[in-house]
Length: 599
Image (cartoon, rainbow, N blue to C red; front, side):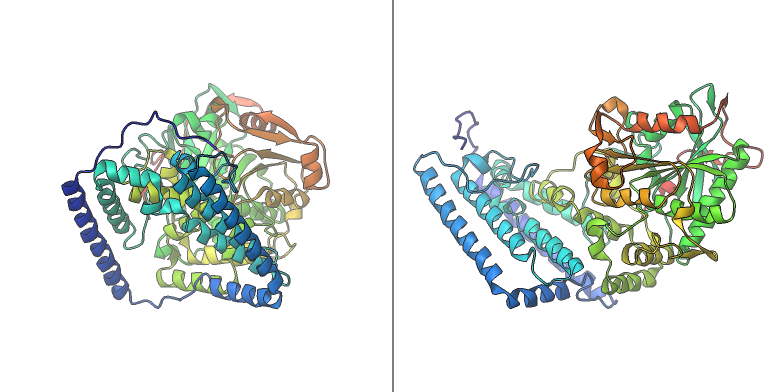
């Protein structure tokens, strides 16, 4: 136990009149929030499904299984009561000035209780430990129930965790010491500011709460984000193709064509110059092209997975071949674009189209038998609900997809901002990655429902002939080009065991590496930052466990390892190429116009 220190400044006395005025403002603003919410609900003439996430049936099934064996719940209850009694004894000893070991402590990496009052103040320490014990009891109660379907068990576990995260004492003004302290110091002005922030976020979300994660005034795409020089050399209904200006006198003969995910905008790969993957690739002597996908509206509702293959990947390959004169092109597919690229490679193999010479897959899944927690959002009932919502507009709103991803790390990507923006009344810190995260894109209905059904629900891409594109049964075993597979150890969206499964599908020479961090930071990790690490294994183990057992750890970024792999596959050096050609004349400067369209 850490004893209370005496080095804190005196707590200022609140101004009763200022506090009263601010509390009246809070009451008035709260009433406005409620009235606005009710008006919007009344104005929404669409039928809202009561349980679109199909949570009720999952918990009903869990309850029936639990009732069949009540001993497990009783055992968990007894353990909780014992721990609560120990906590009370511990707290009494603290009030008496004795030293005592906590009954429970936050998990490593849990930053919710970093304020020192959670340790030094006996009351807040008791609140913290009571919550942690209750959360542990709830999770243990729903875990490992005999006879429960594995997918239902995952859903119950996930939403139980969502509930316990939401009920944390840090999320409420009266049980968060930092919020209480700030309220006294500011005479309640933090709560007034917080409600104003909430009203602004409701306006931004057109009635739905769209929480700001970054200072949106601090960034502007094309000015301090996505600044690598280049030209848009092709514009279609689906994408703009950007060719970047070389920074070296000579470049590799084979160009490099990058397909970022269409779930977000491409500039995740071109944030600030110091962490821009695109700028770094250009500096290594590659002729770099990137696809900037359109932010679709209702006009593209019927664009299919097949259309994105023909009118996206293959169309871009056609343009790059004509511009550079090279009939061998190296490619990168990030996340969902990697899934599409893998299917396209199989299709092209059947067509005897061998223009793609190599493929790098960044955090991309092709076998979805272990897709992680995203699997819980894709059952028949939820797909029916998603399809119904998309049918009304022809697309899925960008913030719906963003919310799903944020729920996978709710404490970091939801509740921390609720506390900062609404309870403390602060503006979010300017952070380029989180600004990009909030700049979401829409999903065309036909494309998105196909992806969810065929990949996440049925895992058909991993089955030879499981899906057919333009009359061609897709078989990933036909992919025989060299492949570089990058996965990240803490990736919640493309878990590395799922990414590794591609090594058993592709039949070319494969290099698999595992990076530190997650889905974004595991990829966007410039060597100059000297952060994280990555693991390699030069052997050919049969299983992931064997790969990990023989893996060697390397400090820093995996980018140089990838460059060592790709450069021998990139041909000889030729004079640097200016963007465009006689047929594909530059249209405008990078980053183009599609990336600027907001959802």
